[in-house]
Amino acid sequence: MRRWWPLTLRGTGAVVLALACFGTANQVGLVELQWFGMLLLALVAGCLVWVHGARRRAEVARIVAPEAPPTGDEVTVQVRVRMLSTAGSPAGTWHDGIPAGLAGTAGGLFPAVTAAWSSGERATLLSYRLRATTRGVRWLGPFTVTVADPFGIARRTVELGDLTRVVVTPAPHELVSTGAVMGRSGGAQPTPSNRYGQGYDDLVARPWAPGDSMRRIHWRASAHRDELMVRQEERETSPDARVVLDRAVERFSPAAATTPGADDAFETAVTACVSVVTRLVRDGFTVEVMDSTGALLCEPVDGGDEAGLHAMQTSLADVRAHAAGTLSPSALGLSGDLRGPVVIVTGHLTEADAVALAPAASHTTLPVLLAVEGASGTLTQAHGWRAQAVTDGTTIADAWADAVAEGADRGTR
Image (tube, rainbow, N blue to C red):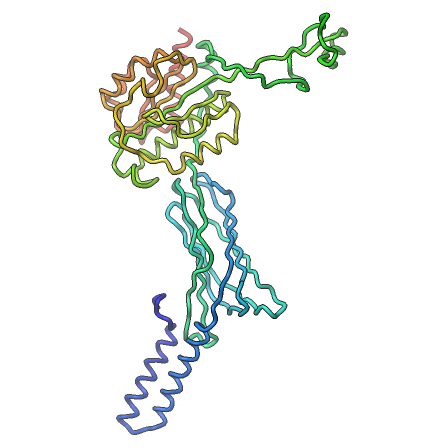
């Protein structure tokens, strides 16, 4: 039966039978049938009052683990329902609303809850599993409970609690390291930062000289060399890199501007962007992530900062395409001397865009251009870029590996 209909199939049958009794009683003249029909209607009315008379309120709390699941991962949801009204609640069924982007079912038997003056447990813990399929901001709920009377004649469905926000982040692919190509090409422009201080055993030690503080003596190195050695504080370098996610809707499809997951090509571009940023950060680069207009999509991520990577993935969970012009090197800040890698992830690259980007390749030691939709014919116009197309036959990892290998080969010439 439909949710808005307050009777179950059994209750609907009881009403139909009661009406049939009234009609038959008039035809055959049996008063007993009228009394029986009235008894059925009274039973149905009593069940309706029993189900709808008590106002049952509850507090619903969900715990989602992990809090921001990447696409493809399993999600465990625990739902704690605590009754707030004094009246108890009979056993019934429960259902939790599952939004698009999360696959699975959430429902089952809801146990009876005792009245407030009894000693029974008034909180119920439920759990279910989902799979994150599409990135984006999703909302779990509403949580509904359907209860019926003891005779199974009337029923009532109530919504309890609020919706729960779940952020599904794009999952990065495993990419090869840039160590070989950056090492052979002379490295990146260093950005010094004093990250090391006293207490680190992996600092370079040098012989003690007059004027050195005794607090800087490196006792382990002194014992090994049989002479006083002091800690030589080094300046750790954090090379810079830049990753550009092209969000121009004309290089994808209009659906890319509506909702995450609506355009497969744009989803591939977002995944490629997240994968490249993850690779560069783990290679020790401080990475800026921006769109085709030069606007930052998240805070810069320092080299080796796993928490920053998680924040970056969360920032890109709901990113969408928007109206923008051609890829302009000046808007992307590609006119200066950028010794670190510059990676541009775009969609359907036009010949004009490729020609415009060509002069900017000389400003970086590793210029990588990844196009995810029908751009193989125009990639050759982007002279100087390690341009690769991500197609059905070429994965993100393959395209990145080819670009890095091309850069490494050029670095040995």
